Image 1: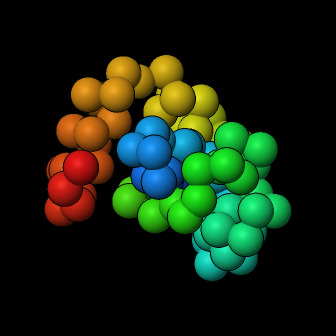
Image 2: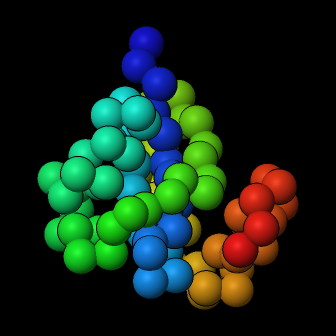
Length: 86
């Protein structure tokens, strides 16, 4: 069974990027090398500030969509709940 992650990155300009992957280390490397999402290419380096594990790809994608709908304050609260300061 693959592990599926939903994650939030803090970009160098202070904005957040939310995505999902089944290989967190590889995806973070891709974002920081400029081979990740177009949004993060010009906002490097990025820092991983939040992850969730989902049992299926579909659940990770669904959670990604839900997080993207949150306000910035709600995302900051979610991140803080897991011990990372914004």
